[in-house]
Image 1 (tube, rainbow, N blue to C red):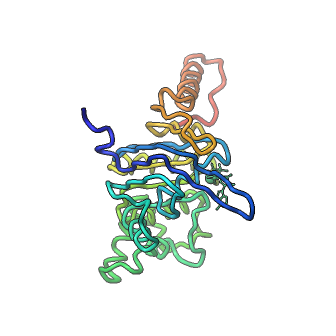
Image 2 (cartoon, rainbow, N blue to C red):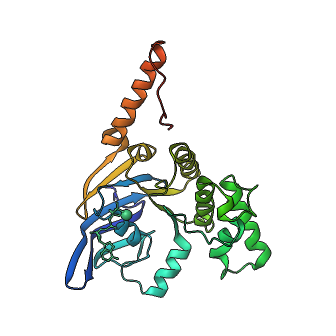
Image 3 (spheres, rainbow, N blue to C red):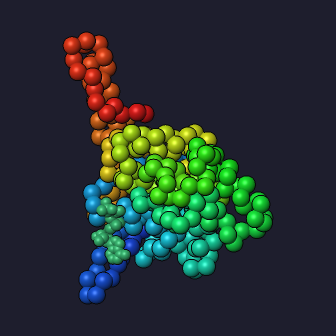
Length: 266
Ligand SMILES: Nc1ncnc2c1ncn2[C@@H]1O[C@H](COP(=O)(O)OP(=O)(O)OP(=O)(O)O)[C@@H](O)[C@H]1O
Ligand SMILES: [Mg+2]
């Protein structure tokens, strides 16, 4: 029988994370199993406090689980020390956050170059790679702008350029559109989809059905466990999208009906 995990880039088994704050013990992850194959585009959903960011921090090697196994690209990262984790994080992971996390006094180009400060290849090579990443996200005309001279969507593009600079194995995004309006959200999702089409593995945490509907698969968490793990067509987010589309199509054929507002691009 073929091993279903053979092509998995992320393989998580019985993952737990316990936080201790004073006398309180918080079970943020309670035995979570998850496999993600190369070049999947997956949404992670679930109510506030269900463990989504905790899981992303583990997947992104920003923190270590309390117990359980995590294989990234076939390597057991759950037992690595802090130095090894930092190395894996630099080589394999691209992170995008809701709040962009850009340095305010640095230009777009300087922000994107940042992960390469300690890399080999010299100043010229670093600059070329950063410019190429900014070009990939459609920002080659804004390289000298500082974050406050960019729109929210453009700031997130800079953050995405920085995240893809090292050609990471996985691109992790924790509510990347949480601070963006609906039109900009659609543009940023189009960019994630483009990167996915180019071969990137993408994992996006979101509270919004419209965002999840751009992914192939939806993993829902509850109380630190996987509640459901379904292809988009079978998840409520995908069914929601189908309903919105059907309503829009009906409105198109009924001339007297009002035009649908704020359509869902996919
Ligand atoms: N560093 C920490 N120290 C202590 N407790 C934490 C820490 N980080 C998260 N928690 C707790 O772990 C649980 C899961 O938190 P987490 O941030 O993963 O939730 P989430 O699903 O991302 O929620 P949201 O949708 O609000 O971002 C919560 O009860 C939270 O209070
Ligand atoms: Mg969170």
